Length: 273
Ligand SMILES: Nc1ncnc2c1ncn2[C@@H]1O[C@H](COP(=O)(O)OP(=O)(O)OP(=O)(O)O)[C@@H](O)[C@H]1O
Image 1 (cartoon, protein in one colour):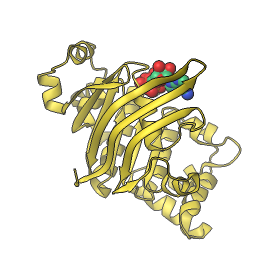
Image 2 (cartoon, protein in one colour; image 1 turned 45 degrees about the horizontal axis):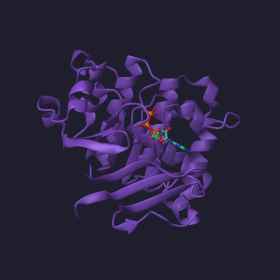
Image 3 (cartoon, rainbow, N blue to C red; image 1 turned 180 degrees about the vertical axis):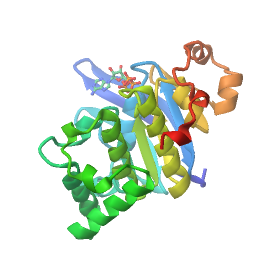
């Protein structure tokens, strides 16, 4: 357990309703080791987002009760003050969402937002922050970073914007990236680019990744370990090979019967980067 960068223990989230508390997720236990990818799968409404929002401490505490322990490098996050969590989010735990457009404000250039994100977590000045932004974009093979940064979000394709967002997430070398359906809104070509990018960040910086996806093709390609959720509980937890070769739970077997949408071995990815 000590090798884990992130640990979730006995997470139980309930929402307040007029009839009392209603459970959204319970008995959630898992950990992620440094540089590993943990896949989180399950049908819609199974509790994947509630779990990731709990880790990020983004659930509405007024209407939710969040019990259990969430530790990042040994530090308890559950119940931490908002101000402290703001210092951790984006820097030590980064979040990549499904629709990159939502992560950017339309009225500022991508570069402005990239630089401000860096500056909010570091003491770098504008010029240094821009240099760091360009460095990371070059490392992750984004073309013409200088030009890219001058664009407004709407001027970039969804795939390009997602890759910029991942570069932003990676530039402060977070210990953990939570990627919630990062490829769902993208075409196949961009899905592959985004997955390769995440993998590059994982291997280069030793970032641990919690990868939420309903797409088992994505999970098969990326994950080391997989958690399967159903109705707010973990029904199966296994090494990715075991899960695909010997699924134990009936629900997992059912999930596996839905065909993976991603056939990466047919695509020479190196040609795309
Ligand atoms: N703020 C909330 N208030 C009440 N119920 C909620 C709230 N957020 C989520 N839920 C409920 O919690 C359950 C788990 O939702 P969650 O969004 O975590 O599922 P998911 O597995 O991420 O689904 P999807 O794949 O569709 O995103 C669902 O029944 C959902 O309706």
